[in-house]
Length: 170
Image (cartoon, rainbow, N blue to C red; front, side, top):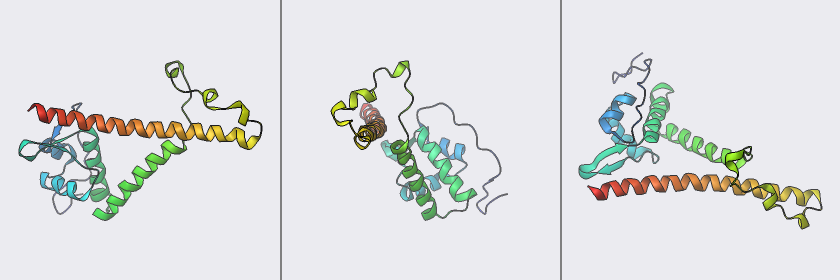
């Protein structure tokens, strides 16, 4: 099946190589989308922000290539409009965040010995009733979820700083 623009939707996309950065031409080939479409999607989707270097040369990271593939699937294969695809991506991001908030802490193993244990959080003086006993558990789960989200935010900041550092070295 082909679209009016000549895109073949039934073929599989090529595997994404293990690289840190991809040029717009490479992303275009990996995602079967023209370069000018990628530039347009940058304006329409706030999540798609490739690093730009001298002369506005774009460099995409792996998560951005995967995002382009998601956008392509939503628009070309599932038939969403730009606004609909944007809404779908925002809902998916909200679900991902809620998974962190709602999921119980991972089962401890020996490598997690440095993690905070539930006993460190529970205050025995407040655990005399069932209502008070459940409160520290909820507080612990909420704290664990916020730490996970903060770690994701920290990783994003580290990636941004690395990109800025690379720009400054040029």
